[in-house]
Length: 132
Image (cartoon, rainbow, N blue to C red):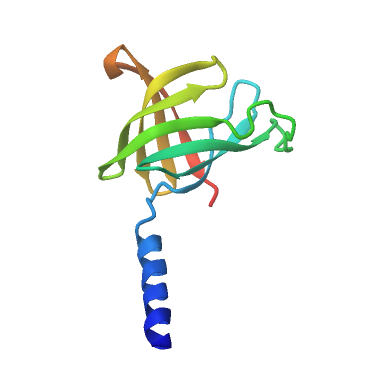
């Protein structure tokens, strides 16, 4: 009986790992106008995918522990659409304080993240690099 319980626990653990989305992890945003950048942790939140600001860095790469938006959601309600594409979500732009419709595209260790207006016709975006 003990072997069945251990086997079931291992099976559930492996199934959970297999269900992790390829976009899960920590991502480095593109540098802003001042050279600073963020690390964003992307993970499942309910049935969707969200991204939260976990750390901030200045142009020299020094950590900014007093960054006012640490812990704030940057992305939410993203849904996998297949083939590395994600959509249906929202993104908050710290530089403007505005929220936009969002879509993402994953290719290897690069995540193209876009915020769009006008029904998705006008977008601005960044390429983020995987940290882990």
